[in-house]
Length: 320
Length: 320
Image (cartoon, rainbow over all chains, first blue to last red; front, top):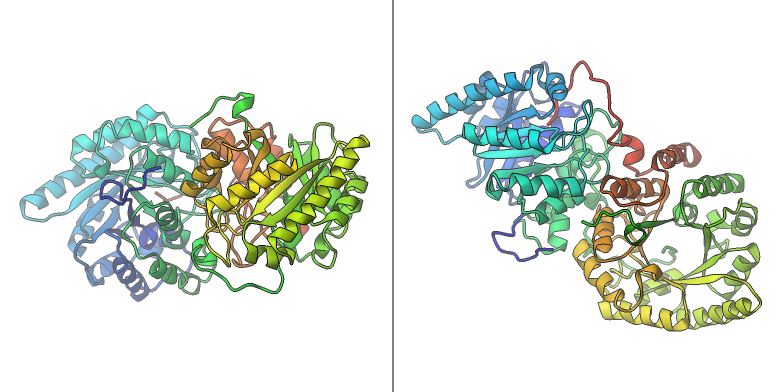
């Protein structure tokens, strides 16, 4: 296991709770609270925060205030604020609101893309090309916005099952040729396993550098952190994670959601992998989530505390 | 990652829910239900089941029916039924009840041993020597009972903090010299991390063969399966796990307990590591636990189902 605290070994966490975490919450989180959450997170060492989306308010009412959130957050220098966008109109709105990066999503699986985006993969790619043109034009005018392309269901589709590595590699290559600055492989419904992850990441890193690649895992079947470690060992360095483990999968009621940020950062720090994130402060923020959302969250470390926090001896205990 | 389905690569799961899982449950589980649970488990491919304990009924009232459980379960040939015992009296009771193996526990940490066993580590070792004498005498009379020694808090103590590797190695060596047939390293309160696990397992396997060594991890801070994989990669082959993830840690209210059996078996099967366990049937048994215990359990796979179980396409979904 690599453990040198050099830049090359550093693990970069992109915090996605404000977008991927909040989008499925049934309770409305006030715009003020979203902004406060993002501003707290930007003070803890994150270099990348997915702060909202510019999807139709009918599709995702929980994030209908994306424009207001982006315009009112306290921009911290060095932090990239990312917006999920579904199409050209969303891209225009996100750029007007000041998003630093646009994240475009399509699924490797046709069936999932139809269910999720209501179009074929080919239609999604055509729509991406329009956004690329928009962004290239904006760059000529001096705007520094970047593009990230996400391959959802890259490790399996709940409708189609296994996804061929060649299918994912083909999409990665198409994203690269389109000029995307970043590419995310997402295990949208938590179907990945560490052996599969190691194999696919090695093949993708033969096409794109580690600085371009983000892995997005869900902990649906308890394998989130094993997949992160496998990807890290295979050379990946950027990972999405969600404060408190917010987020989820519509096919697994009660199951865990995205990989939990504080659990991931704890794993890193315990094994000597630097993240630059203030973990004790992060845990404090996570512990405010149950009051904000009205339910417990899947985070383990927020409940258990750090292993380094010792306890007084009790009167009685019996465990092995 | 090793993946050949040979005996040498097979991962052996010892199911500990009937003992380590049930011992902290506030709800009384009827003797009939305990027996039914154990008999269901023995039909699913487990070669080892920790079926109960012979601790003082005042200390652990939930397991006060250990003798009745052991005498009434339907013994399946090839299955080793293990009893946790605290002392000579417990050993005598367990042997009379027909336990195949006695599991003796002491902590690497003096503070934890005093809290847990109410004696010093030296006193625990002296008590173990009495049990060894008892068992050796019984063997001369034709009884085939075996002994397993557990080192609790082997990866960290909630009172003392880090535990030196030399301390654990010294106890392993003392267990071996006493003639124990098996040795378990337990991460009693979920303080281990995969780098630490790999390092310690490698050193222990230089003293004892993999066939003698069991690893017992808790998922308190979400690292249970990462620790299993690290130990497996380092050469360990036997692991404790608890159906539904039952069990827990008194210092982490709401946190996960033992590594969950079905989550572990799913990890193995998804990555090509054979266990010999019928996973779909195991999940069905796990799904009976909430009704038995009156609360949800931490298992992920029991909630999410297997990744290979596909879903019909929904009308609407939006996730990445």
